[in-house]
Image (cartoon, rainbow, N blue to C red; front, side, top):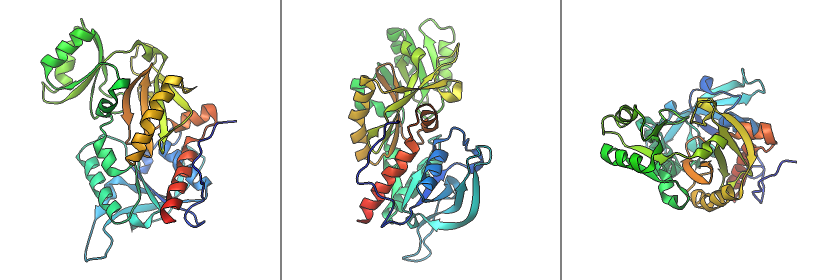
Length: 340
């Protein structure tokens, strides 16, 4: 039997009624239901008896025609999910709704973390002020660069440099001999390169990534343990899911990301994995980060993903553990406590 997370006291919703849950997402046709954690959470919410709405981030708006009128709203599509991954939802109506009309709003838009993303967090923070409950908390999303946030927990990290100074970067590579370089705003392994000290393309890669020294990047010591997988550890309301997904690079690759062709293999958390997760979990949850994805290679923390952490589907398929369902149970508890 799969292990479970416990969020006691468990509650069905608010005063026994179903919850109205809104998911802030990218355009629905772009979601890949066969692997998408947001779709998994929508399906889990329906199984729990709740109402599911989808709001594309591009429709978020603020309008105050007069005092007391709705402030932040979005075009909300009332969804019915289906088990067919190729045809996974039906719309049963849509309307512009204030975000405070929902019991909880889940921000699940993918990066890039650009001006439009930041604008969405400003609007969501305004919605909070109007009474909406938003997860992950908008301010926490802005405050936690998925790459740079590891600096707060440097006891768990590899030698790392964050800079746009090419001289500093070159010196760091000479000292470490073998590194991984990546932009601070990427996802899915995009623009991630491994550079050996004697790499003939070294200068060209650095000039391109830093845009000739005008863009800050991250440089990390290369870990040989990537061959055993880049582990994604999920935290839900500060508690670690007991299984991680080790994303193992395909032959000839140094990136384990599934989007880069890696293979996901579910594994129980190692003692070191659990140590990292149990240390970071309560800290991040206190800041309003309901769903977090820690990336660990070997024994080292490499990233803290907070925008739209994934891997729930693969973990359930391989272990039976329902992380998406655990998220909904956590929301039930939060909404019940807030209404008490």
